[in-house]
Image (tube, rainbow, N blue to C red; front, side, top):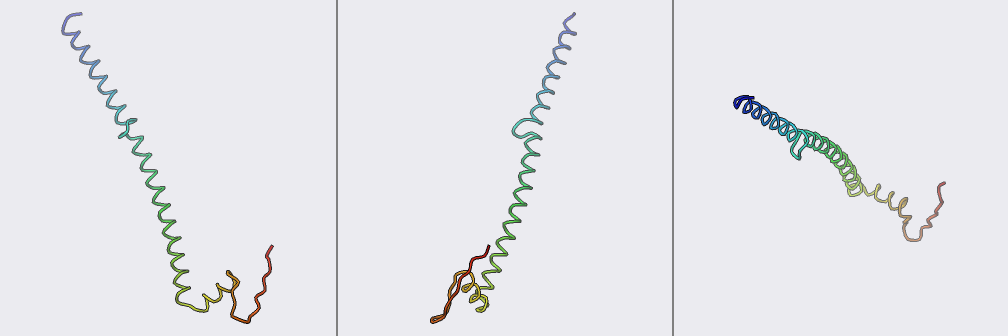
Length: 97
């Protein structure tokens, strides 16, 4: 082998190593494609969780508004859930199976 062929072989091996390193870095490193798709999946999961929690909050806020605006509903909930009644009124309890 002459000197030009040796430099050509060295150049090709260094270039091939650099390409392999770049491919590895772009796919499996902390900023690579695998990490990117993993984070993208986690973001979508968190968005769905956030939407579910917002729906629950809206439902709870609606229930609070009903309690504040409707005295009949408030009285009904106090009687059924808390077992409350007016003075001189008998309250009976029974257990559901």
